[in-house]
Length: 218
Picture 1: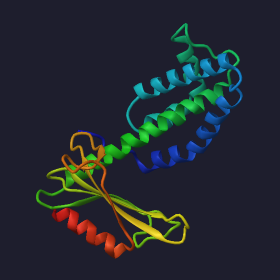
Picture 2: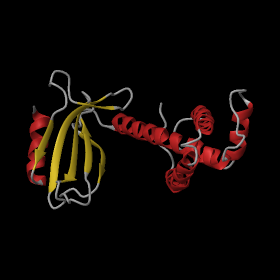
Picture 3: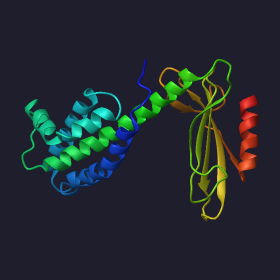
Picture 4: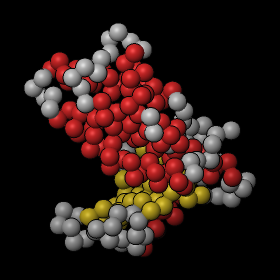
């Protein structure tokens, strides 16, 4: 059975650290654009540290815990292979870049685990389930809306979103058919036999929800 998701404090801690990690990632590569050797060694070491973080566990908790000794982590990774070196590199920046890389992967793992946990808890025959929802439901050009619904029995999914038009004065509402893999939680666009990516656009939330109902019943 998969973990239902990280504790709220782990989510918050990782989110707060992300700014630090992102800045470090930018610093790690900023000075190596015209130094191929430095760039290669940085890239290789960042990748190796990220791989070690993957091996430490799924999700955000192991990532947050590992940051407490990130410099030691880099040292151990360097010592694990003759192909790796930290000579002339910003170890703090290398660590931050690796953690930023792993954060994106871990966040996706959390999302998938949350979806699977919600599907597992769905009552038999309950019908369509809202897996994710965020933003302003009525629609606003400056406040994106996103909702993912799924039929737990079949994996059929609808992704409901909003976005601004080219002038940023009107909100465009969209509904896209998809499918959730009931084993992994991954979302794929389109449905088998429907010709691929199909995006239905609407001018209002009301019209959008008519499309939602129509597609659920089709």
